[in-house]
Amino acid sequence: MSRNLRLTHLLFLMLIIPFFTITVSGAASPEEAAPVVLGSVVVSAERLREFVAHHPQEVHEVGRREIAERHLGSVEEILRTMPGVDVVSTTGIGSRISIRGSGQSGGVLVLVNGRPLNANQYGTQDLGTIPVDAIRSVTVFKPPAPVWLGPGGSNGAINIVTAPEAKEKKGEEAKPRSTVKASAGSYGLGEGSLSHQLPLAGGTALLAGGASHRDGRRENSDKDTQSLALNWNRHQKSGSQVEASGRLYHAEYGSPGPLDNLTPQARQDYRKGSLETKYTGGLGEAGTFSALVYGDALSLEDRSQSGFRATLDDRKLGLKADGTWSREDGTGDLRLGLLSEGDAFEHTLAGDHTRFRNGISGQVDRSFGVLTPSVGLRGDLTNDFGFAPGGQMGLGWRLTKEWLLKLKTGYTVNVPTFEQLYQTTHGSIDQSRGNPNLNEERVINSSLGLEYTFAKDRSLQAVLFRADTEDLIVAERGVDLIYRPVNLDRGLRQGLELIGRYGWGGGPLLDCSLILQESENVATGKELPYTPAVKAKSTLQYTLTRSKTRLETTLRYEGSRYGRLENLPDERLASYVAVDLKATQPFPLLGLAAEGYLKVDNLFDAAYETHLGYPTDGFLALAGLQVKF
Image (tube, rainbow, N blue to C red; front, side):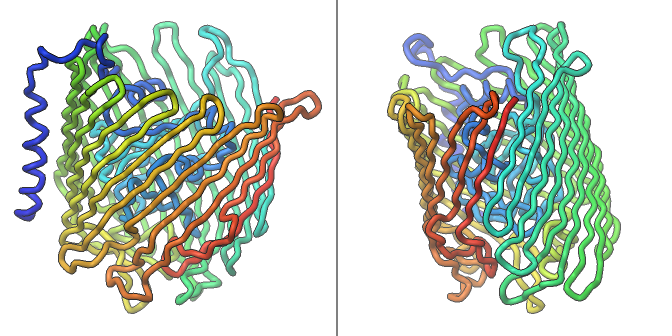
């Protein structure tokens, strides 16, 4: 670690550490000012809601009701509704996720029901493998992410919970319910889904499936997908809970390539299956315990432009266990976690590779009236990169009933994924390859936030943030026009995030977010790729009282940014403004509850590139019908 980097964060730690030793005898009582109190937290739907409500960590959640009411049709669309979060769908399986303006290709930890979605993504996540009808909630943790979530969350973390809807009354058996949805739109887009919830084996089961087809605007950008998910859970009289879920996904699609390296014959066939089972129960009088066993099987056939076929097989098996002990007065928690994974990777070009990972984490959260400090440590050991430490310290300070101050700093080591080292599973071998000589990233994140809540649905938040990364992994394009990951000595990104929400008492609701930042490849003084100086997003929602018509419009702005490390003028992607619209109309249909909806993305057909050489499809329209019975 460089001397300047050490000094910068030493000063930051010197500001934070005194807060952990303050005697709070003169602090206001809980009755005088609302304390920041932590409940017991394990990675489950109920615990996450409690974490969202009380912990000073910056967290945003979208639940099942909002997903259904706003007709959010995918995980990507759900994430785009959150402040400071952007998602770009790629031509293949993956989605590039940016939290708080990061343009880095990785560093976002994605979890499904508390376990890693897939440890092998290189900059993209296969979010499309999860049917939206099976999703109970999606939660985003801004960086630095809590250590108990797992390793590799230097740019934030996302937890997706798939589960049947809660029973209407305690002890009541879940009622069968079904939802059918069908839609069609521009560029040959057609989608359909079906979900059915019913009581099963003393618990509740949810079966959800869907299929889609799109032709795309460019040649060889068509895509066909099918997905199926089954979730089941049962609550025992003792208070314990058993959950099981499985998912199947298949996609066949073209890989058109960038405009300067077209590949009209390149195709990919992607298949993935996942299974997991989880037990949650009591641990003594003041604790809870959860154990999760999971597995993935992934297969990819990649046909290059030349006709050469490469195959990839990836098999993973893992165990994650969490224990939480809470103080009787609800003012503190101790969390301990274990993670063990085995992953086998076999590729035609890269050969066979195996990784074993074992990790342990511990976190203490304690409330002293208006002050809530948090300290967490974790360590992970892999057979190929050795020991990777991590840690986080934070402080929530309730200045008044309306004002909350948040200070956080965290250290993360990101071990290169198999895809970064050998071969990506989410891009054609005509376009991207791995680099087996990569080093681990070492990342320090710091943030200072001030939040003001002056009424329900009325709040303002300002966050100063900074991320220093040594051996930053970025993509570099060679003379053969193929991208390969490389390490930069040091990358720096810092800025200001502003978030506002204003509701007019049951009327319109406005959400806004603005990110102002600067980035630097410290060795060259140039900007980091895909890291614009300005990003902004605002969404206005309104429901007409008489007709119950729900209207929503989103305005998105992204400043100019470079697509490559060299920062050449012809590699600069232009800034753009895009407007999206959505309208939903509920109505009765043959005695059933139905809704018709219309979505328009990029209303004014703004031309822009989300990735160098890959223009967007432009104006997109989708109309559909949903029926519940």
